[in-house]
Length: 142
Image (cartoon, rainbow, N blue to C red; front, side, top):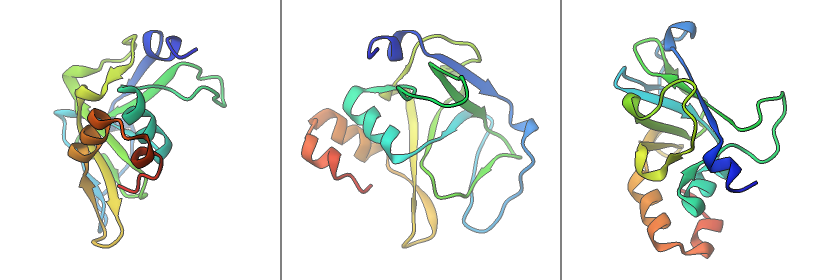
């Protein structure tokens, strides 16, 4: 299953024009040069441990081995506090097979509640990946 979650994953990319959004205070705006995925800290930890953006092992709703992304632009904003992954739009296309690498990431945005905004923590994620300090990864609080 581990190899399948890397080699056979299907990336699905949706256009931001299907999302009705507007800027609100503390939201993260996006741009058309990038594609985004809202996720959870468990996936951030998995990326650090494996080096790949993989789907969950167990999924609900029949979307096994799929990763969903949204192309950024003026109508797409994130403000729910969940981590947001960012890659160049040229790195992923709809229907592309194979998990993206940690090195494809241009951003790992984590909401910082102390300053009420998203902060790009990619450097810290890459550092944890390169060091593979499992104790630090397990207790990650980026």
